[in-house]
Length: 267
Length: 309
Image (cartoon, rainbow over all chains, first blue to last red; front, side, top):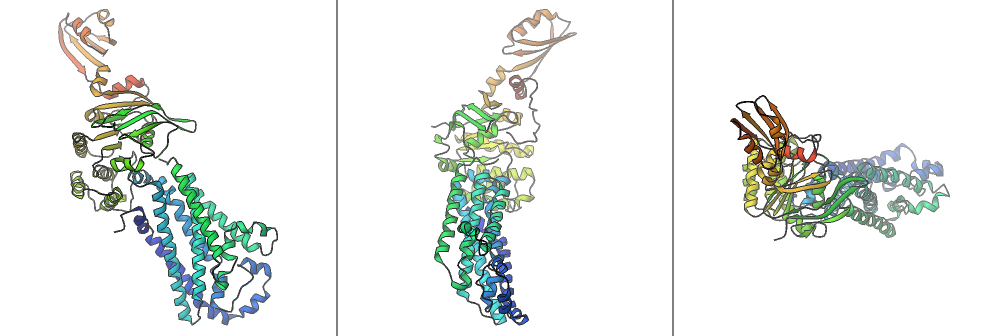
């Protein structure tokens, strides 16, 4: 039975949200993959891409787009924006409530009166979230492969898996940001709103910096720089990107633990 | 044996707003201790400081001889708590919640837990969000008592309970006391505290006014007496007596309030022909009125809408 620890209970609490996110990603991924042959038949993608203005190309995720494969197609349609928006949005929504939600509902008083240290509560919940994100990503991978097989348009599973892995790490970076804000302020709205706002800004900084010189200096501050910068679906995983995003996540997590330890908990 | 609770100049300010100020309280082990005060007095603040849910501005607190901050985990294993507005995980059934909390505790006597469920007449198969307030409270009570803690900290424990279950609750407190364990009850329910507690601490506007046993508090309290005489008696003979206040004589009936000993009053009354004497027993409400003044009364038996401050 799962109800033996905060970790177990959180896994249990997350089962339906994970199911819906995973299914949505799997169906979306499978559908888009299966759509690829129809797409290529509909019009000549390469010609379209070569005629597209640079600025538009940049906005949809980068100049180095290759629409001659299904993988490249996913790299334009799904991976740059929709996938991180959904996955990171999910992480932010959950993390913003891990502490602040329990405080608002009043359940934290009873929970912490049992021998559960505050740091343990946070880590247990985060561990459950990490599992949820990886499960969702894995299910999406399966969905994509099913779509590829069904439509006879093979995908480069290694690179897709790498892209999904990086998306999970990116989501954890934004999620732990939400966790830290919630641990500091107790304010669930701010904890969700600020990371989501930053997601939009950072996405734009990364994609527009191709065209706007002045943005290139601040681009390293955008988390999307480490997600989109090395075009993982084309060139594979850059471990430097993983390290940066993981370090950001660890830093925010550590901050969250410190803030939460010090907080006067709301009644 | 260490005191169950010991605070020294415990102070908490929320910014500029007063929580509690210089509360120095000692609760000896093996008692049922009542903690009383009106809304906003600082009861919940004090309790949350003891549980390390909030941190003091000044002063410190020890529970079972251990520091509330540094020995948090050790304390949590031996103390249980029911907050004023009990909030539990609605999607779980009572049974699931009690199993969960039992696992968090480490080890729980399942037989005793089940016995408590039965004694409190709780249906553990229902989801908590579907339970009435009283039934939710029962879940909280089982969760608190099942671990057989050395100290129970209960904020409004009988809220929503019917009188029969309140009796069961009182039995549970008595059982705990007999086993040398301590129960700390913060309550508005004055008759209940009066009935159950050995000692009472009264807090008002963040400050601890007094800690006394119930008999002593009552002795210090004002008692109302009514004496029926055969014929009207002169007021001036009674007005100056020590401890006598609010004297009225309505034809042959004398009414007054006496602080402390009634001896002088009785001896004076005995010089006339007395038909009847009525002593109206002081409730804690009246003791409160004595401490708070006429304005800020706490109605006995009435549940207040807000949680204790």
